[in-house]
Length: 117
Image (cartoon, rainbow, N blue to C red; front, side):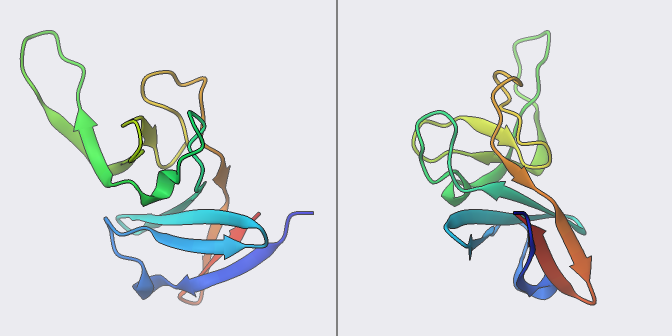
């Protein structure tokens, strides 16, 4: 049964520093991107690593020429074990969108963050 769980106050989560919370038996990472909040299961679908403990970062853009363009700052979490990158908003793996980290709905009410899991 899915239920809404209080996580913390909005001002406790800074961009670049995910908040790891326990919801029943689940470890969940809550990320701030600008003024929006997103939650991912803290398990990498590749090999089960603690995904949300990896860096919140950007990635290189696909380009035609031999150059590096960094973009999507703070929209990506990179697994600390093998470097797989996931879109924080959708949970999709950048290398293969059919592979997804589990996401959860996040709501903000009166300055408090809730996750439905």
